[in-house]
Picture 1 (tube, rainbow, N blue to C red):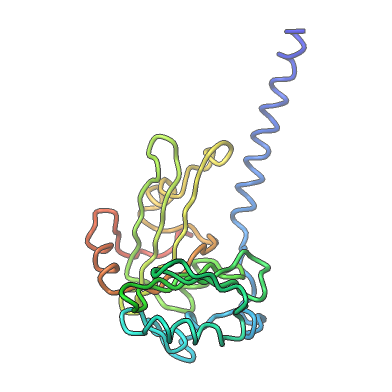
Picture 2 (picture 1 turned 120 degrees about the horizontal axis):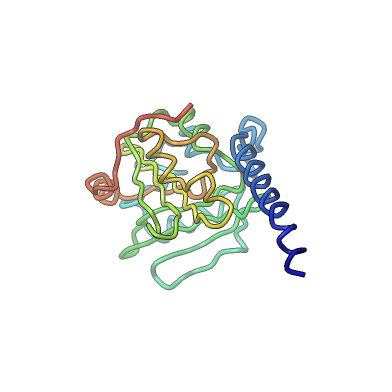
Length: 228
């Protein structure tokens, strides 16, 4: 029996390496949707296009300025929002789902003292960081740090200071993905350049204070572009 198990071990290792190669190759392919074909009544791209207003404004709302009541009322009237999905979290937040959710999309408004503090949304479509940069222009830089240095994983926030936009990604790296190194390792190995074709997980429009704080930390890096 022991001999039989030993004979199957090389085949198992071959399978593991084959899967790792497949995963690595698939990650090189563009995963973003064709943004030009998305119905604006179902998929919001205003943060990319600056219409009807440019960030940090979003449909007439701006963190640090808009009131809680006005923010919720305006969001409920947006065509891509399912107003019946509204969830109120005490005095600090209100959450909504998008009408069309081919991806697990959602919108959250954060409040402080009844004033809009931040806008967070998980897009209900797939968009890569390089697609976003093509629309928004080059960011100022990015904030990057390991989640658990001994176990892998990485947190990334790409920052546009004047627009007060942060695009966020968290990568938990375990098992087979360690063959390619986690995101922090890849950025380091590429001289501070980001890999292409990573999907944006969350879009934030924040107060200027948060942007300035992130840009003063050791985890902040100036923008150097994408690795080839």
